[in-house]
Amino acid sequence: MIFKQVFDQKSSTYTYIIASAEGREALIIDPVLENVEDYIKLLTELNLKLVKVIDTHIHADHVTGAGKLRDKTQCVTIMGEHTPTDAVEIKVKDEEIIKLDQLKIKALYTPGHTSDSFSFLMDNYLFSGDTLLINGTGRTDFQNGNSKDAYNSLFNRLLKLPDETLVYPAHDYKGEKVSTIGKEKKFNPRLQVNNVEEYIEIMNNLNLKKPVAIDFNVANNLKLGAEL
Ligand code: FE
Image (tube, protein in one colour):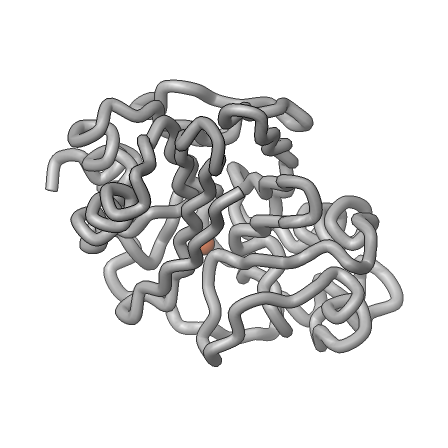
């Protein structure tokens, strides 16, 4: 397996390139529009063929590179079945398996940050989108976000994975690159709650600013960023 984690400075987004060393098929999770040429250069250098691109959810803080990658490489675009966009070609269901040569990536429906949020699990690599961040969790105050759903996605789903599962989030603002389910259970301040009410209380009192350009980003992400 070939694995690359690429950081976007402007939006603090992590994009993941996963590929099969044998068949040379590649998949990208959460690409950022401005970095599409860099991904293509990297894929060429590694002699990989991009076949699939996934967005974990409709992002508010950057425009996806999915549409541009599709147009440039003829890869297939994938999102979870609850995505509000019709521009995506394949909508996967909870527990559905996405194949990449011999690699298997399982889709996990983990709503809460947004109502369309999915996470993706490949062996012990969890791509947690904005559902679970390192020492944090995705905010729940826009795009049909829901703190109760987020609690369920975290406590009844992602935190039930084995402790050694590697956590690769869609963002990090402090330079952290990877964590584990075990570490997050122990140290993530948002997860030190006794019940769903306590979690909702925390999330209701974050007092976060509305992200810059959310309306522009969401509108373009509904078109997979293809018209920019
Ligand atoms: Fe997000």
